[in-house]
Amino acid sequence: MSPDPRWNPTRVISLFTGLEHWLDSWNNFFRYQSLSHELRKITFYSEEAGYWVFFKPIVESLIQDHGRSICYLTSDPYDPILLSNRDEIQSFYIGAASARVALFRALKSGILVTSTPDLNTHILKRSPFPVHYAYVFHTMVSTHMIYRARAFDHFDSILCVGSHQITEIRKREKLKNLPEKKLFEHGYAPLDSIIALGKLMPPPAVENSGSLKIILAPSWGDHSILNTCGQEIVRILLNQGHQVTVRPHPITRQLTPKIIKGLEEEFSANTNFKLDKNISTFEVYSQNHVMISDWSGAALEFAFGLERPVLYVDVPKKLNNKQFNLMESAPIEEWIRKEIGIVISPNRLTDLPAAINRLGVENKGFSEKIKRIRDDTIFNVTNSGKSGADIIVGISEDLAPKTKQAT
Image 1: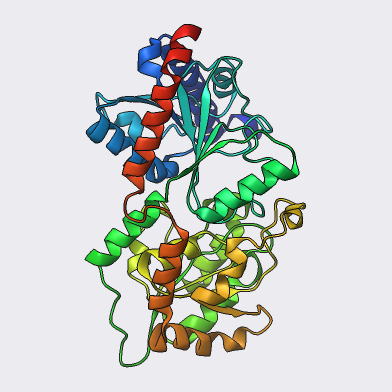
Image 2: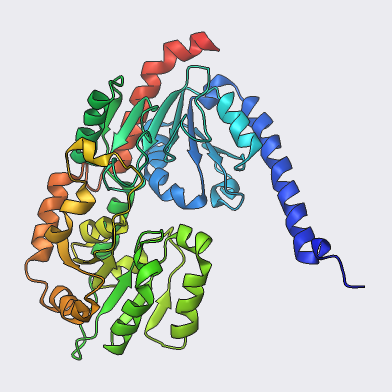
């Protein structure tokens, strides 16, 4: 008799691990709820460990410049913050299932800071208690194309990356007759980190052969580069003698792992090919001359952070808001492409080598232009952490009388 496939060792271990995480999430639910209001005045929520890069400069400034402590809720059981053992950060694993849903519905915190959109329109709901919900962006792109239409409607405050986001959010409020949110000039933490890295790690020298270091960092979805023409692009570049690093979006790895497997099977033996799965750091950016992307916010990170150009492959738009044209303004990720790089059609990949050479070898005026656009577009360049902390402390102090009365 063949063994029952439902009880193979891997499945049993997975079931026990799932049960352990479920119990742990509920234990942390009650542990968080038992805290005094004073300890819950500032709470951060993160869907996964990778979001810490957006919160870290803010949290560090809250601790160092303002003497504040925070609570940190995470849905990632392997989030390293759970093991940080810092007195100023109380961390709680709340999972992504019933405990998380229950905690959000019963939340009592002065201010909740998160980088998860779609509050009150998707799984996570607003609490009936007087919590102030603040959103921190995890990309520099616009608010009205890659996000769902109501992604930000139910937040009280939004810490904006640049003026384009303020303009777009105000337009939507008027269009849909929504109450005005508090919009703040914040900035973008990863950009500051990349700028600092770029100063420590200048661009690599271009080899006499003309070989360049190129990073392919697209968005995810059926129309993204990796899902449409990524393998062909890598093949062309490697045949030209370039060094290629592919940095797939984590959702691509989750939804279409066969895409990644195909790249590994064809190119892993080539010493000029690398696959970078660690999106929590940006060091790999500084090691490359040019980025190839599509509609990903990574393109703005690379260009604005290092003042280096991007080659855009013109695949169909990443569109999650079918009403985005009602805003009557082009999203930044659309209009900026020809300003900070070159756009080529996926049907003309034969143009790829010449375009790459123009960007990586000739690089005519791109650096100065990119820097000028960045400084005109993004708030508080190199100072977003302090800016974010100042904003959150200001909100928290404004809330103090109201929240004390509510407890």
